Image (cartoon, one colour):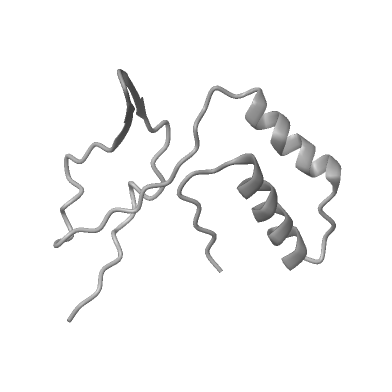
Length: 91
């Protein structure tokens, strides 16, 4: 199962971590949840995911996705899959 989180929050990360631990028959403790909460409260980062769709295999060439809020512009520090071939469907 693929976990999809458009915006990561402490709650969604705790639920996801608990789910993954449960799938491996491992405990997910209150201490584990507190580590996640502390990570978010001490961080100046906002975690989010973008899924892009296009009409051809090259549509991402030159694409730049940012999150803007007022005068602030947030850019990704990591782009997962940027060096991978895109998945595609045929009709």
